[in-house]
Image (cartoon, rainbow, N blue to C red; front, side, top):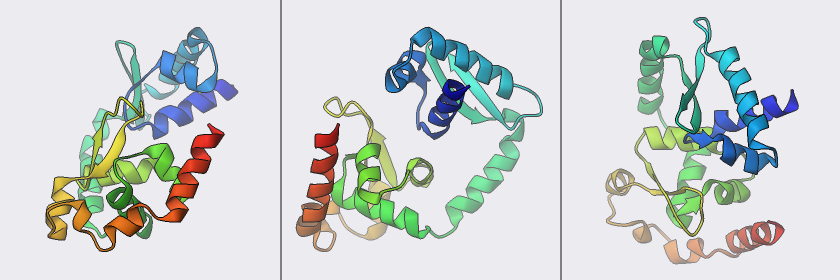
Length: 182
């Protein structure tokens, strides 16, 4: 039961589809066990009364909303995107602007909290971009051209105190400590 719960949490916060192999590796489990747990989650969520679905295409799995609720979800997203950014969203956007490209674990190490939902919201608003980075294996996030344009600058390097804040001692120490622990 614990494995199912862990997988459920992982696919909830993941910003992209994951294979059973990727999940198994992250949890130190057998791929076959993860596949069985994913089938249990599909049985749990892929029902008419559920607001969520477990999508499965090829080797990839992803949690998504029930397509029957798309009108309600669209209304909510439009309302969310039109509103002002929250303090956590602004903090996350600032870190990305000054430290990007940055991975989610690096961002979470700096902020000290899970940033999955905030990243998803900033992506939906078009304020950040997500890219693959072969060196870091994980996706990296950077300020989008839309955000740069909205700020009235031509690149993030034009932000106030960019050079000193990008290389700030606290950020360097935090990320170096995290690297040494992994």
